[in-house]
Image (cartoon, rainbow over all chains, first blue to last red; front, side):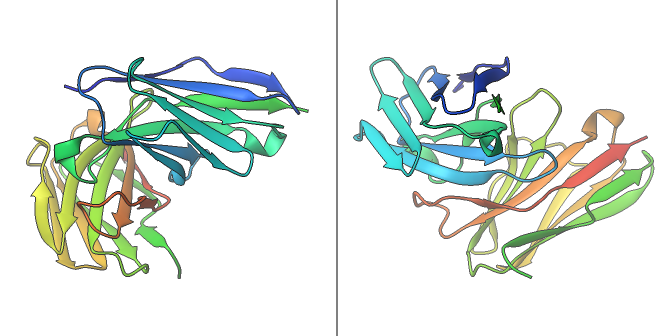
Length: 113
Length: 114
């Protein structure tokens, strides 16, 4: 079965720095990856999607990369702010699985002023 | 109401009780999902409905019974649950079950089984 690993330890960074979160997967190559943000007591909120044939996607201060050789996606937040503090989840969908997502355990990001 | 709503937000039940979780989406989507989120574990997909027909079961115990009466509403009927079923239950919807679209999540129901 597909296994997704995200840094289980919290990531603490200083305001203004770039946060980089890692998502590694095993076995099959996904058709695409999605990144979500989850705040305590709330449901996840979609941020970005990147397809298997795309190397990089950007949206404002967010950037996602996808390396199918390394089986890895990186999620970057530039000029981080305390309001970016949350748990970030990566999710992948396999070619035959349509929109059925497999989620990683998430990485908790803390941005300190 | 906008987006995806879930009721109740919190539920405490005994192992012999029967309860139901409700989800409603106001986005005009045609696919809906139930997920379970336990402490220190990834989100687990439980059920998928597309055009009101169940597509995926994911080997969920029969004490969880989903119902999708129309494309806007999704229920999760609970009976004779176990304490390990205590978790955050999240509902989501998307436009199309076989497309590359994002999923919109509700706020979840925090379930505690005593």
